Image (cartoon, rainbow over all chains, first blue to last red; front, top):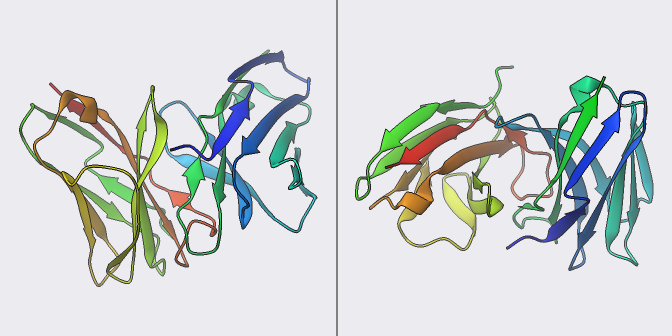
Length: 111
Length: 114
């Protein structure tokens, strides 16, 4: 069963705009990870944020984590057409357990 | 280092048959996890192997099984295929055991059951 739920399910924006995706989860976590998947291919790891961290940056990506609300957000700034993909959050509730994925947000960036 | 490889990339089978999928992890990675991805259910965790032992298991029937060899390569087997088994099967490898580690995914095997 899914641990995380992404919102929105789909997002369409123009190049240059920012894209924000949200993830809510149900139980306490060890860390939360974001992955990207280009149409029907393997997933690519984007960023990992630990439960004791509140914010993390990587290039144009900014991830926040609010453990009191059991939620995380992924912000992609200055989006490009190449950012078109599905984005998934994934959590492992403690070290050693399985990584469980949400259903993802499909992002479409048009030029 | 070479990435995670999966073979075959595409497979067509008929109901009732069995299938074996293969995954070669990144060199030095000892954990291999398997996922099933379908449009309706999304990414569902199947199982994780580490040092030839199954460490985590998802909620799938016994028709789905796997194993890991001493060189960390892994196979998963699905017996008595059903139409609903049509999916993209992804494997991922990581250095350590458990999903809290960064996972490196292969390109997947697209299985179609007719």
